[in-house]
Image 1 (cartoon, helix red, strand yellow):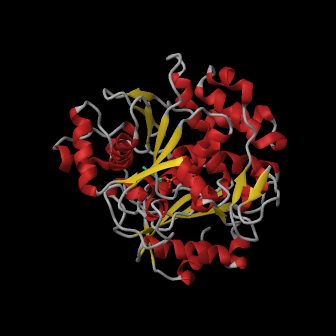
Image 2: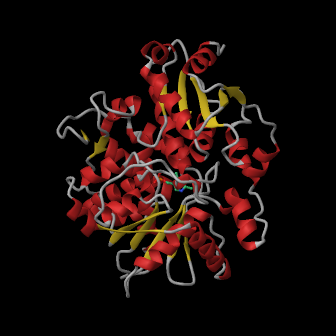
Length: 431
Ligand SMILES: *Cc1c(COP(=O)(O)O)cnc(C)c1O
């Protein structure tokens, strides 16, 4: 059952919500998940992909036959999710072992397979176009997830010269059904072009325009599943108390998924949200006004969000009550200087962390109370931020094979003017 954040009791189906991405009347879709209850121990004993398939089948219901959903989840989640203990007693859930080396692979790969399943049932005469704006990681995950999928095209819009060279190679070298448009403008300009294209009804219909951004319900549910790996990885340690879980946050989709996992029965003591200098949410929880603002550029650039688009969902989970939010959560932020210090400290302790993971570790340690055990989510592979680590540590992080292969491919990005007519012409001219 789904509710819409600003209109409680307005249900729709899972597939409708995925196709639409946002409800026609405004607000966001928010799932109400049944608690797993007494089934938790059995679920935790299952391997990751199998458990995720069972969880997603419970959440989604019978809209997709169980065996088909199971095959699709196994195919999407075909990489490891290790829980790595650190010398200080905290543990790291590494979510960066997918093809583009960031946690966004979970959501993008699940979404791609759901849409593909849906398209097979009702084949369209023309391909559907996934249109997405990116500041780096989302474009890579979405482009790779839909690359080569029959019936789909991907158009990635990104600000020319403002994503890292390695990120660019991950989505602007694929060719085939993926086109990358280097827009003369900022990330906000790219997002405005995408919004404008969806608002142009004729264009949206001609190309079956579909969104893959982080408010899509399929991305959110895929992320709920991996939180259960925290409890599964700790099962061996009998009697261990429920952990405090720290989530490095930008648009707050990942934290929202964690809160949903807790409502579905995952044992968690509390969540800590960690941001970089983009402190819209920590300031609000500190008691200041909620003030969305333009983002600041930081070393943990995938969290450079000043107006987080999933915050509305988290507020809705707590009935919009600031007091309830403040008592259910802990929070903190870290500057770039603090991030560099934390990367060094973790390196000395034997762990190579990317800047996003370093922010989470520092904030977690600052918020843990005596006797509590802490887990943080690692959202990107350190090699993705090799430049930062080279400057901070003087070490070269070897590129994993997937990234080395991407780095060696020639770019095939196309320049695009910051103009809705240029985007419409590019889409209409796609043969
Ligand atoms: C997207 C991203 C985040 C932020 O996740 P949200 O769900 O937007 O809060 C954190 N770290 C990395 C590496 C990311 O790519």
